[in-house]
Image (cartoon, rainbow, N blue to C red; front, side, top):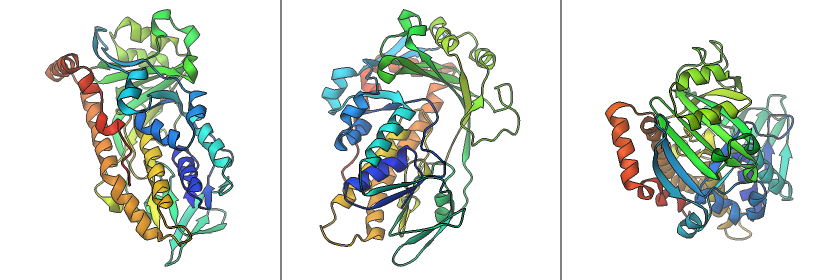
Length: 401
C-alpha cells in the first residue's frame, strides 16, 4: 500500500510494480495531478528513469541544458560554469534534465497505469493505520479500510503516515520564501533564451532559471529571506501548507533591489508568480526515521529538502528505485519478509538522504551570503570552477542496495 499519488508515490508504484508486486496507491485528491513549476534532474535521477524504460518519455517533455552557470546577482559577473550536455553524459553516464513537475508526474502516472499490478485509488484520504504481525490495515477518513502486507508513506512534508510512525514533529520554517513563475521562451530577449541553467547569487537572495518543455518555456525561481505576510504578497496567518500564495511582482522587485539587468528582465517577463514558504525538517538521524516494522517513509515524508541542491524529486526517485531493486532481489516464489526488506531499505538510504539534506541547507547559507563570506564564495567558485560545481558523489548514484 502506497499513501500519496505524487511523484514519490507513483515512482514507488512503478518500481514495485515492475518487481511483480501488487500495489495499491491511495491518493486523497479526486484526480491525479501535480502543482508547482519546474525541477532539475541530475544524472542520478535520470539513471532511475532510464532503468524503468522511461528515457523516451523524458526526452519528449524535458530540456537538456548545455551548461550550468553561476552569476553574481549584483554585478552580473559569471563566477563559474559546469558544462552539461554530452559532457555530463560522458562523465556520469546520463544527461542532466530540466522539466516541469507536472510533466514528470504525468510520465510516471502513465508508466504506473501500464502496469497491471498497480491499482490507483482516488479520493482516499488516510486517517491512520494499524499494524499486525502479518500486515497493515489502513483506514480512510470515510471509514473505508484497506489491507496490505506493508505500507509506504509517500504523502509529503505534512505526512499523516509519518505522524503516526514517528510521532508529531512540527516542520521547521527556513525563513526563506520562494517566488515561482513560468515564461514562454518566445517572450524573452534573445540573450536570455540560451539553453542554460543560470543561478544568480546575491545578499539574502538567489534566483535560478532554466528551460523546460523542450526549451519552449523557462522556469524561474527567486528565493528571498523573509516572513510570509510582511510585504511579500501574503496575509499574516496564511496557511503555510499552501503551494499557491499569490505574489505581487512589486514586492519581488522591491526585495531584489539593485540586481543586474539580465535578472530583472527575466523577472519582469514572468506573467504570474506564486509564493510559498520553504519548510523542511532536520537531516535524518538514523534508519529508524525511514522505516519501522512494516511501515516505511519515502521522499518528502522522510527527508524534505530545501531546494538549494535541486535534489528533492531525485531523492524520491532514488528511494523508490532502491525499494524496487530490493524487491527484485527476493527469491522467486518466496514470501517477502517486509520488516527485513524495509530495514535494508532504511539502512541503504538514510545516510545519503541525510547528506543531501545537510548539503542543501548549507548551500542556502552560501548562496545568500554577504560581506566577506560572499567575497570568499565568489572567489572560490571563480577559482575552482567545474571541480566545485560537479558532484560525482551525488550524480553517480543511486547506490546499489
